[in-house]
Image 1 (cartoon, rainbow, N blue to C red):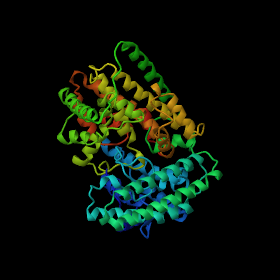
Image 2 (tube, one colour; image 1 turned 180 degrees about the horizontal axis):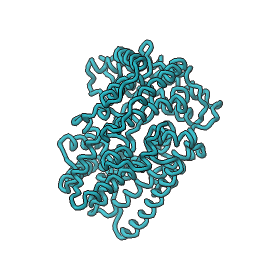
Image 3 (cartoon, one colour; image 1 turned 135 degrees about the horizontal axis):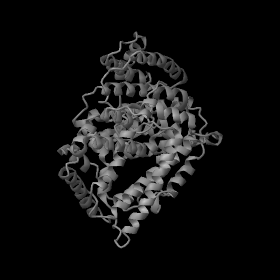
Image 4 (cartoon, rainbow, N blue to C red; image 1 turned 60 degrees about the vertical axis):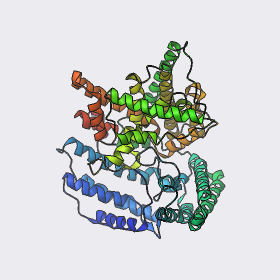
Length: 546
């Protein structure tokens, strides 16, 4: 879902709906009532807007927390038992969103604890249905405005950046947390916003003088805010993780992951050991074969990346693995990017050795093309879920797809590519363990980053780059995101195993993927229930009331 700046007028309408949602009597128990409640909930979830600026001040947040209890009571009055399974899944998705806001108020409090929450300008598109991590309302997604800017788009961007000085002034009164890592890396994130604004201002032509002035004021306010954060770093000495007990609650009730912190640690340790052991066997088997040479020029990059998309789409079509349409091919080609001479970060090391590998993980762009061209008829699944609840489906499937396509024969002609797949799994497991240890407050962000680097084969994840700390900063802000790649992979493998076993010789991968994609971007645990028709015991426990 492409995030756009929401106008104060539109937000005012939402606030009116929110007031109606809180004051209305509890709804009956039909699915249509759930859909109506969902629309009111989505309006209520947004903060109030005062003079064009979202209000995260203590009094406003306390009021929202109080009103949330009324919303939760209304949802609890709806009984989904007896509904068709897909409708029951929708109910639990909505309940998870409410649990997400409840957790924000009780534990995360990003508006009070996390300076990075107030970063609202982005120059690159997220590959997810909604941007990863918690952010204040009013994102300005610069990448989404075609160049040269139309007058309408310049006006929209200007309206967005003009709110930044007031928002950052408000943030100074809101931020009271003591988590050192959140403050240290939050300051860096704010400095990055300044760089984005500086680059954008430099790209504007003389006819955009008014917009440039707005951007310059936003950049100045951003710099002053970063300096203010940095001036308070000496007094910030506390841990930034939420602790194991809170993490368990969040996995169960918000992320809808049917495991505890300790169980996820065990799963990630197993995936790390498995991937490194199988990598060693692949290296033994392939020892007499040359390692693939990385892409070495812009011409080679364009040629090999486009050839990789062609080969990938052809493989999926010819093996009858996936329904391929023109917009899917176009979506993949649009994300090829451009050549960089280096130094390369981790995924570049993989991508430049075999460009087809990361095209498999690029299933994200297939998901987004589906959202744009084939919107889900389900009114609750049509929009991106809040609190990154989609991640076990989106990140989990994209990660699992890499290994599934390898097993399906995609890389048979290039045996050393199999090594890249296991290196990818190892990196995901190592950084997931980094998150788990950070959130348990047994590692700092720097220690978690060093751990991830030390456990990623071939030294391709480096402390000298920006990627590893950027990933761990996201995982510190958004619990459960780091493990979602492999937890989701595991859960989706269960779906595929159950469906193929039940179908026997009648199993067809293309039909399975059509059904899988049609179900939408909901948590993998709920997809398993919906697509198999059986609620596993661990999923049943997860769906117990908070």
